Length: 70
Image (cartoon, rainbow, N blue to C red; front, side, top):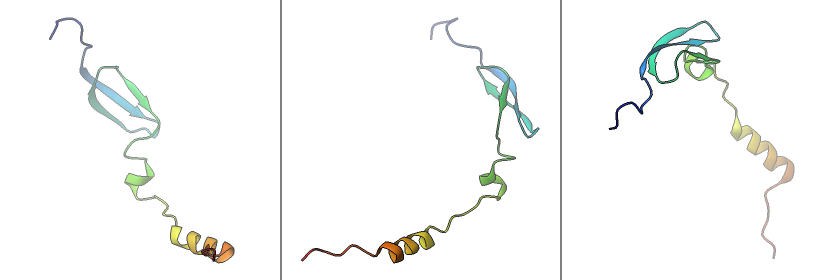
């Protein structure tokens, strides 16, 4: 590898909008992010699950299933 052409890879602080902060290695310096693993709904268990089966049944009931042309 050529010396002097690679960016500096150092330990830097990452700060989330919720107030959580942690350290990681990065080449861009200090980071400010909007969402992290402490406030993301998928990781916190506050995720809303959609009832897609009910939606499909409602659609089929309203519009019927297509029939083959004779």
